[in-house]
Length: 279
Image (tube, rainbow, N blue to C red; front, side):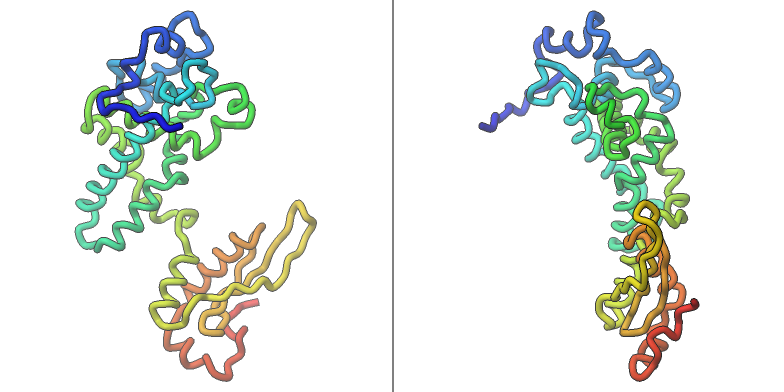
């Protein structure tokens, strides 16, 4: 059965008994670690409401009896922070790259707000060590899980917004995200070569590139896969990796370096498929 909440319902107006269960001084397990002041120094922001900071750091796995609906975890703040993050990133990219069209800006934005990038930012401020977990989440490695800490980073942004407004959120993003955008774009780990070669191949009428696993060697715990990529029936690259996905990415990267529409067209008939692959 779903419960509809009124528009003015606010988790911060919950009964004092419920709030004490999360923030009360008699519940040591629910207290934010003393290092929270260190976190404030790291992000360059001092909270007016310590309750907001505590809520932002409280994972849903925390054992709070009164939290059946999840209102005393950071999920609502994550929801808010996600929207604010997307707006500020969009605004920043719009002014940073005036020469880019909508499609190009959308691709960069998708990378910048991805769990991978936000998780990396969260790691840079060691956000995981300040989070409040239940025992199971703690034991399963929640403090180092990218999804968990990236969500917490968004919750932190939501908390800062409620505490002081959007300008303070913007300052934090400038320190830890905006100034690193060009770095992220240059980092090969964040480039989707398979997507890029797919765009090239389809735009030139060659259809979807074909990935062929040439061989798989090594023991089960240390496999090495070799994969070729064919565009228009011509092998343009070969990649090696510990799994097929990584090997395909490496093959796609090589294919992009060698890609030539004219060459593929001229060799579609009667050419050796492995002519371009260096062995």
